[in-house]
Image 1: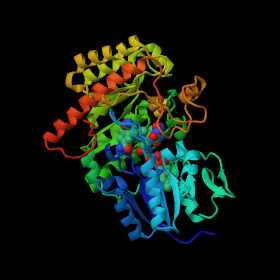
Image 2 (image 1 turned 90 degrees about the vertical axis):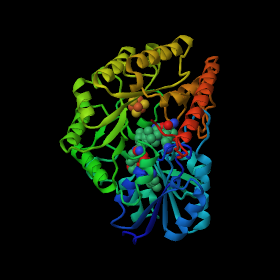
Image 3 (image 1 turned 60 degrees about the vertical axis):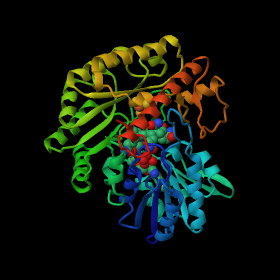
Image 4 (image 1 turned 180 degrees about the vertical axis):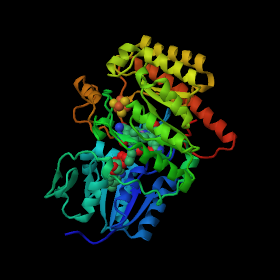
Length: 457
Ligand code: B12
Ligand code: SF4
């Protein structure tokens, strides 16, 4: 039997109050699968930075939900000067919802929930049901029979004082997925926040195996590609209906496979969409052929965003990267050849780091700056930090085996891979980054930019 229609409020909990806004794409996907059965609304607490809790309380009182679906996204990595965690504000938001509306069912999901699900359920007793992973279809099905979560995979709930998990679900198939319902949240504030704030997704999953990565735990190694025409339909819709002309591709890696990336670019070009966008790119030279670079440029991709994490071959092996230093040099050459902007992010003091390998990063950056000048964007370099340990990763296992952390550490409060003497070099670099970051913020304020957040430019 299918339960009667309900009032469902989808809440994006704090992402990172000191960072750019992030449009609640996951919730827009969920809403698209609910709106023909239930009264749905989406509320992003991050849009109410001055007084988020009062705004949330007012929304809950006004909407009178039967169910609140709360999206827990980040356990934050942190800024150069700030390593706070997002757990506490998320907990406060959940407690507030239950206090204001004691009868409401709270269902939690999202990436941070899925990474730390067991801990989250134990630390957040106000959560009635937790949903692991991609949830478009299972959340819809859950709301059809919310008193029986045991019928579905990927559900956490309490029964007789015991935490029950119903077992791992599979990933969502794009063919079954509806497009995200974009009408519940105004895109304008996200557009003002930063050029990465409005996301579009073209695939899920990653075939690579970086040792620190938790994306593959969440989405798997099988790359599920969305039809390029459907992706660009959504981009066109965003441009025409919501005046969004800058976007970020929320794929793990945009250029694997290359053919899918080219197909999306060609579709954007064919429709003459005047948009600027960016994505994360793999560094292996085979994934950056000239044909792709030409297609990217024509389609409005303004920035190649790379997260190589290191440049030294020994370190890249340690991190289990699929490319080497010569590929890194190729990224510089190919960006120069095609006049593309690039950014790189590196980890500090990752496994095996020594002074020589750290110097390799400095040498590489000097080379890139020399070759690319202003095409090399520097912002991500201010964010360089040691690797935060995420659960369900090989690095987490290594940290346990080497005694860097206790076997039962929950990792909700940040733990970093930052051992040995190199941690002092790390501290020095981060202190310098902090100073530069503050100077940059002051300069931005002097120019009249008052948005109190990181703006990646
Ligand atoms: C794209 C991306 C970004 C882009 C976002 C661009 C944009 N406009 O959206 C940018 C570059 C801005 C970014 C930044 C950061 N990110 Co990021 N990002 C991602 C990535 C790759 C995809 C996120 C996405 O859009 N997915 C698409 C949507 C459709 O999926 P979804 O949100 O997960 O929602 C689905 C499910 O989670 C679930 N769900 C979600 N909410 C709910 C709620 C309920 C009730 C239910 C039932 C289900 C549910 O159902 C949804 C549909 O299937 C993820 C990795 C990943 N595996 O997801 C990391 C990820 C979310 N990011 C992460 C982090 C840490 C960050 C940063 C803190 C990093 C940093 N230091 O800069 C910042 C924080 C930014 C901020 N202000 O919050 C972490 C968060 C978890 C954690 N480890 O803390 C992730 C998971 C990466 C990882 N594996 O560690 N990120
Ligand atoms: S390329 Fe990115 S998503 Fe893929 S395994 Fe490495 S860190 Fe994870």
